[in-house]
Image (cartoon, rainbow, N blue to C red; front, side, top):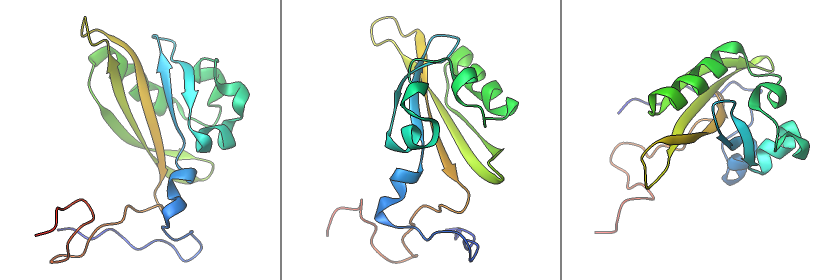
Length: 134
């Protein structure tokens, strides 16, 4: 198992509230109109961003981020990339939202996570939280 790199000394440490620092949203249509933003999204972009096309609301998103959003919508598969946002590296993950009846993609969901915001990984030989007890 590969261990994650250590966070810089100035970066916040991982804590149970890390989800509040991870903006995420749901968009519909090829223009990626935002229909939902989690609390971290609203804190980062404001409540008025919901209802706007992503290209008008996500002003700090580099062009590469929108390329990935467009590709996930068009290809109907999950994609991810590292982007540079607000002077830091962020992981952008985008997944299609397929219609359950037709299977056609009607939107996407996206999630941003700062590079320093490392996931909590169990040490080798330790039981993870998701593992059932023996």
